[in-house]
Amino acid sequence: MENPFTVRGTIQNPSDFIGRKAELLHIVTRLKTMQSCSVVGERRIGKSSLLYHLFQTGNERLNDSRFRFVYIELTDASAQTVVDFLQTVLQALNLPSDSIKDDNKPNRNLVAFDSAIKTMVASGTKVVLCLDEFEGLFANKQEFNDGFFNHLRSMINQRRLALVTASWKSLEVYAIEEKLTSPFFNLLSITELGDFTPEDVESFIDYYQPAVQFTAKELEFINWYSEPHPAKLQIFCDMILQWREQDWDNDTAKERIAKAYEILGGKHDWRKWKRNVAGILSCGSIKTWLENIKIARDLGTGI
Image (cartoon, rainbow, N blue to C red):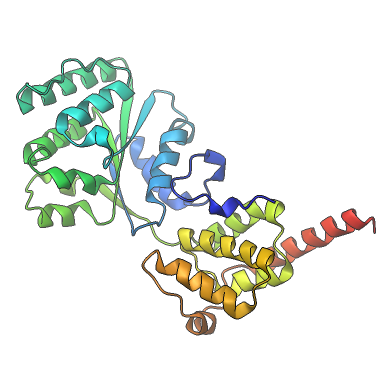
């Protein structure tokens, strides 16, 4: 059996994306009127996957083919200068980018970019930029300055484009830290991304259960000891399968999982977690999974 929990990073397959219904509804509702949103959450909480999923499924969720979604990771080499950023956006929209030049004055490039977007908008297209790791722009403040952000604000206010950004901290906090004064930073509606809901956790287990067939003992261990943080839940399930293959005892399994969690910058207090949390899975879900396990075994043995 292939272990599906070893694949980490941004979720590429839309069918593998689980949960986040409230957050997606919040964003999509605002995009209907071309309002912009800022997704804020800690490291490895799923911000990139959320933005990439929106990029992939936005038209379907909005039920509107006029929208054009562009996904850009702002720490990528293609977005390290304003010229690179503007060219990357236009190329993703299949628009000419030759008017954006290194030897142009910054304002001239911004005006040329705005003009190209205006032409697209005039034809009925609605442009949405999904800008991941937005804090990457602040590494080059000489390029991405108040003038750049003021121009973006103007385009957003005129409904020529909408932004969905992802960052560790709110954009207002970054503005204070980087001493930026543009009103752009209090323009976007904040969508906070936290742990999975109990329903999200159940959906996660339910999605993978047919392939991995967690046993009753494994499901009980998951229920008592796992955390609803998406990356930690994935690591936990990965370790459960390794436990199965290598026949660890409980203490060894706990030690391995705790060490894996430390990579994410956190710790796992097993006694405290079990004492304070009744379990993250509902009894009904566990019962259903166990019944399915029994049915599969019965079919396999012909009973």
